[in-house]
Image 1 (cartoon, rainbow, N blue to C red):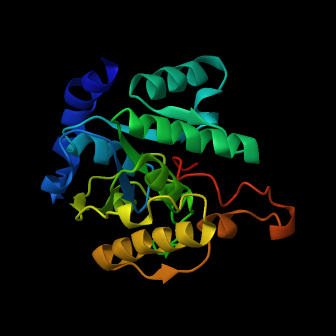
Image 2: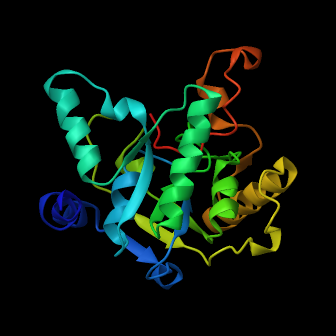
Length: 242
């Protein structure tokens, strides 16, 4: 209930008034059944405007930290993210990463529309970064299409580090669904999963016009040397950015 109240009563009308969002290619989103909306990720605002403009309910896999805060602010964030249908995932270990993937597959098989950011985190500079293979693994295991989505203008409305959003036109472009049924039975093959992920990222690059960078965005944000990173880094699906 809170999801629809936020969308149509509490927050949605204000977002439409101040940002005048538009959407193209809405016919590419199936009216029912499981599917993945794979989007570029420019700002926190992406996770507000995409559900706003999609008639169906969109579920995101959100990082667990959004649900573990303390005090009044922590309780408010936990209630808000839970109420609007966000599902917490833990990215701290290989077992946790696999649990996140399993959660995504379960939701897709139940017919949910799952929002995923293949880059795994917000772009630090507006370029498009290498996708993590979690999106491919979930699509292949659940047998669902991947629908490329491009967000335009959210980084201007919600620049990194900004505390207040700034009125700016938001545009969303939805591409034609990508069908990976030709890889049935090949789930778990990392070469195939990388190929599928790269195909998704190529579609996003073509649609957005962003410069593509063949490294993980998290690598630019994380000062920890690669040899000290946890082994689950490439297996966690694109949760909401921190």
